[in-house]
Length: 199
Image (cartoon, rainbow, N blue to C red; front, top):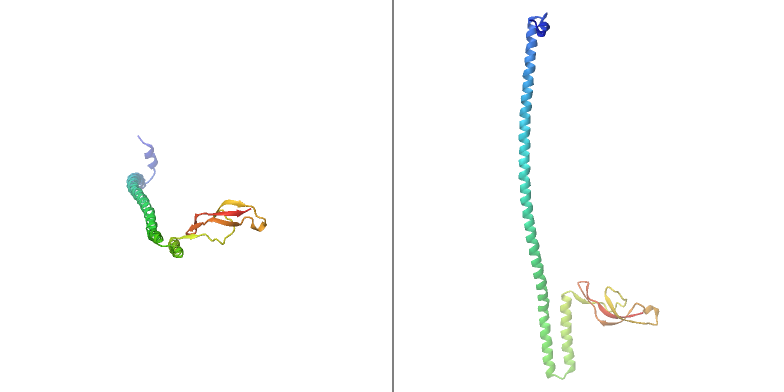
């Protein structure tokens, strides 16, 4: 019985029939090779993806450890800073008080000397020396008197304890009297000056 293939080859020379069969076999082989290379490529892609996933997981674990380490370091730094700040504040007060002790000694000597002396001028001179010593010590620590020549009332520097009516318009808002001196420490108000202001 003659098939369609036989009919197709009928009338062709024998060598053409062989070439046609070979080309079909080549096509089948090429298709197999393509399928095989695709399977290899898919397997290699899967391996690459799995390797990337494992690499990323390792990187995440490393970053997590680094983050925890930094958090612990920061917590230690914060605690150490608070402790040092507390010690500095405590020691700063201690140093200021320690500097006042020689002035206290001078006052005690002056009191003892005043018991045995009736010389008012000597007592006044000794008190003035102690006052100047204290003033110098305060200046060394950044404490200064506010300028008494500044006669304009400023709420940032002054505290009005009394308001007095004035006959002259130019005296309104001016400081007429300073009841208690004001002081600054490193250009910041330490104590407001208590003043009488003209109204």
